[in-house]
Image (cartoon, rainbow, N blue to C red):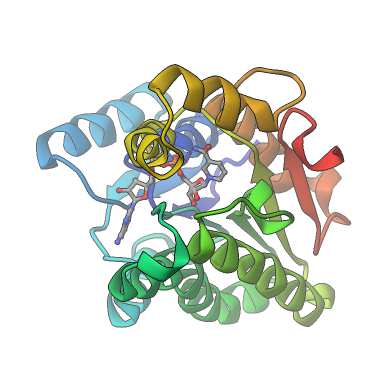
Length: 260
Ligand code: NAD
């Protein structure tokens, strides 16, 4: 049980992040939600999580492209709950384009949200976790932290970077009761995947069905999408005492993609 623990989950208004929030709240953790989206929908989710699980749930609106907002979010979370015990770096965006046409501002945005935000958040939570001698740092990387696909230069670079950052942090915090790990999903059926289908159709001159079957599921030997709740179950395991010696790892949940 995570009763009395507090988890900050970036990008938790949708998809995998929301699944983490629901799973950790169900295990008793207080939750800080973060991410973009419709204010009424976010408030409804916040209130329902709190009521359903009897935990405290806050929504903090930090933009993951802004280091000072990330630091302020961690400070506010620590002040509200006497510390942040679990940090899940999950916010992420995708952009699909051949490199010679890849917009420079998209590169900068993806590196900021998918990689640098994790640095800023880890940097801010580490001192408190060290003081309390307990912490769990989890980052949603991707199969693309281990392998590449064409037309995803920024995403693949950011996710490989996130895996390297995680290993470094794991070593630095190894004797402090803090673990740092990546979870690396293959294709999970979320809005992020759905939204890249049109651009992939364009980049590869394919129909929608061809993209789903020949590009997305082609990568996964199981021929099935990963489900957000299954990714969240892996995070819950990493938060447990049984996972105290799992650190610096990059755990795949990808239907066999990276075994090929
Ligand atoms: P999603 O689009 O459903 O969720 C992304 C979340 O990030 C949302 O809450 C969004 O509001 C938030 N976000 C985006 N920009 C932000 C910003 N500037 N500041 C704060 N929050 C911001 O996507 P998802 O599929 O749930 O992706 C979550 C993570 O999982 C990402 O890091 C993604 O790279 C990773 N991932 C996804 C898949 C997949 O197939 N869906 C596979 C591997 C890894």
